[in-house]
Length: 120
Image (tube, rainbow, N blue to C red; front, side, top):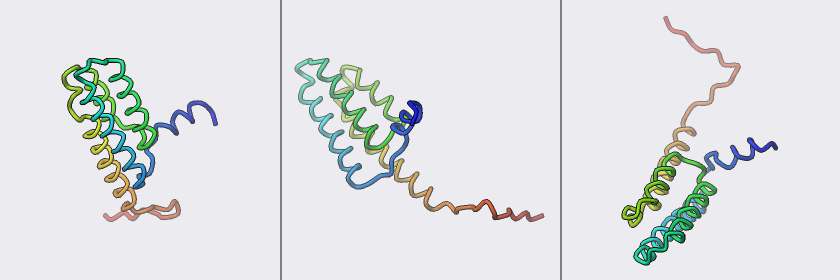
């Protein structure tokens, strides 16, 4: 497998399982909790490391989603990083992924041998 294919496979949406969803939510809650507790101490590097770990682990568990980028950027703002942005973002990504999976499974499969019907 070539490098671009490996990179693409890391970023693609993974099928949601109960374990992936629970682990992603747990990581987001722990990240927000640690940032809330360590925020008043002013440890900027620790705060940035928590954001990096939360972002990488969420991408690994759920696949890349565009909502993760603004969340990561909001976490760089000093006062806004006290909000539970990782938890909200992971919950939103899970809801969107579930909607994508249910709509994809409900779509009819068209075989290449089927000819389209044209009504005039």
